[in-house]
Image 1 (cartoon, rainbow, N blue to C red):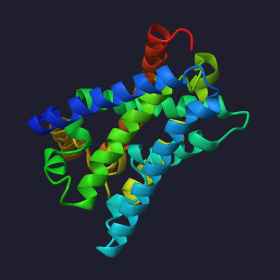
Image 2: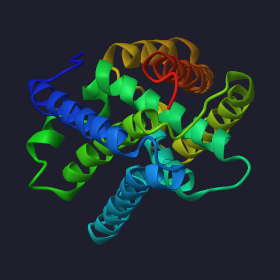
Image 3: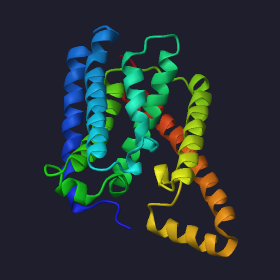
Image 4: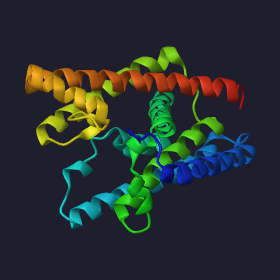
Length: 250
């Protein structure tokens, strides 16, 4: 089980450094500005991310649609949540933004620990030769940039008592949808059908052989759903911690 490949080390680390540098500069110039100006970089990336996802769907339709491209993955949440967070101005703005920050931080955390799980070395190698490879790498790096933007431009004021329940309900709802569609379409959305981590997939298969497919799958899906909720909650509290130690005041 490879956590980091050579290709990830050579591309992801410089990309993170560059994105951090850009967000530091943005903070210098924008932090004292009104929120509508601080939101502009976030809005631009959200729109670009949405557009490259549209490009992915068009590409897939043109080449014989792959069910794996349906938006039931964890990272598919960004297609909607980043766009909503970028332009929604209603009374639930802070809650929506906190949910978005939590899932962005979760992706950032996974990218720092296990980037090979997010996209492969082959995606990086073929970045300039295939649209799907370009999309996969660019999409997830854009999410990291949006997370940095939320932090450095002070776009959200998280409050644990206010945000915890919405995050739990949101992730529970997503998990139910992703799990249901995975079983119906026999497609691995958000690891709800099988596990992309080889040692854990071996365990799943052993349990399946011992208990039968139905019981093993119910157990597996229930565990994965719970892990999605708990990991996102952990990421939310990491986000709050980073915000508290880095930027106590705007």
